[in-house]
Length: 217
Image (cartoon, rainbow, N blue to C red; front, side, top):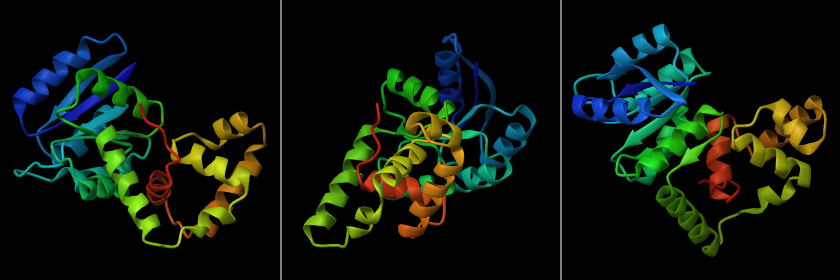
């Protein structure tokens, strides 16, 4: 069962989302919060699988700050940003803060349900329009001659490890996928981070997105 905490300053939206999600046999809304401070308290008490996080909550702690604090306190909880902001910078900031997914409030219900199931399983999800924009920006940089050679310093196994890690798979799951040991996966991951000058998982996800290594629903 996917347990969900909804964080949004609009009561009607929270109510509508609760009705939508509770109607699914594999989902249950266990709490609601109108701003970030309340969300942190409820998340600590309820321990949801997924937090649906609005970004703009003017009467309290904003969603970006709340996401970063929540991931520090409860790294096992997946945060899915649900926002009206169809903007690349908000997307990148959300990833840096630790969000596992980013989807627009205007998205169809089926897409929202897919996003929730995806992040609850430990994988990453971005709305298709945001992904397309990121890839377009990357393509433009390539056309203008920016250095993209670091990726080619990776071995094939390291490239595969990078892709699986960015998708949210654990070391054990990657080892099973590639038929190698967990220790070897850890070595590959360490090499990837060093070769690409990456310091954290959000940086790794951002890099993988720009390299076109992630495929989303």
